[in-house]
Image 1 (tube, one colour):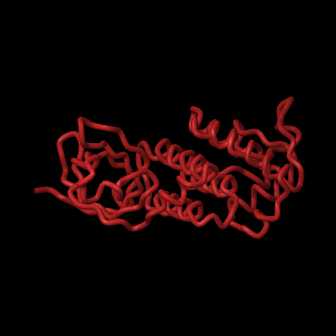
Image 2 (cartoon, rainbow, N blue to C red):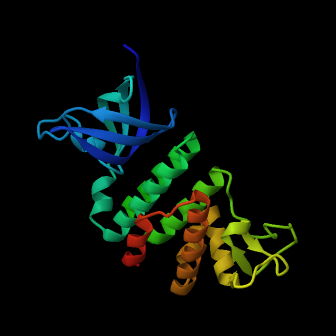
Image 3 (spheres, rainbow, N blue to C red):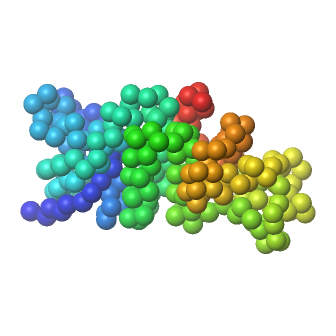
Amino acid sequence: MPTYRDEVVILRTHKLGEADRILTMLSRRHGKLRAVAKGVRRTSSRFGARLEPFMVADVQLYEGRSLDIVQQAESLGSYGADIANHYDRYTSANAMVETADRLNEAEATPQQYLLLVGGLRALALGEHNSRSILDSYLLRAMALSGWAPGLSDCARCGAAGPHDAFVAQLGGMVCGQCAPVGAARVDFATRGLLTALIAGEWTDVDAAAPGTNAAASGLIAAYTQWHLERGIRSLEHVEGAR
């Protein structure tokens, strides 16, 4: 029988029948997968707890006609409980997996998988502010998909920066001549925080003032949702958690 193994992150699940679930997963080598996990909703299931959202697992799958079937699952990262016990971590994790689901509808890369695993691990450990982890993930995920925001030179005409206007539709920071009327103005601290978030400079990120964090989060949310061409519903709950 055609079977294969891969490492996966569980993005979301749907009930199927009385005891089964349909899993949407981001894998390391096969992109985004959808598969049926039979009997996982029964209390006697051997691997039901390993196939919950935010969990990382090594799975063996059988290739089906429409949906693959999960045959085995071994836990690689049990992040679900540590995330679900904290509302801010839980809402940020939901926004991350929703973004990963949207970004990888066509084709995923191992880098996208590793980035998501790293983000979920950071949320579970709680070493940094949950919204900052989410913001860093969003910027990096967009960059891996070819949509890295311009944060230095003008994203439209290439004029040397720094500049103080941010326009999601134009690709990031833009000069005064390219900025439309009403463009968001970005101060030095917020521009520095955006750079630190995409570079993973956590000393600078953790030292940022609350107002600077809020301003950067708003710009990142607008930029991500513009390029995804639809809203990220989970972000509404993240704002409530702030």
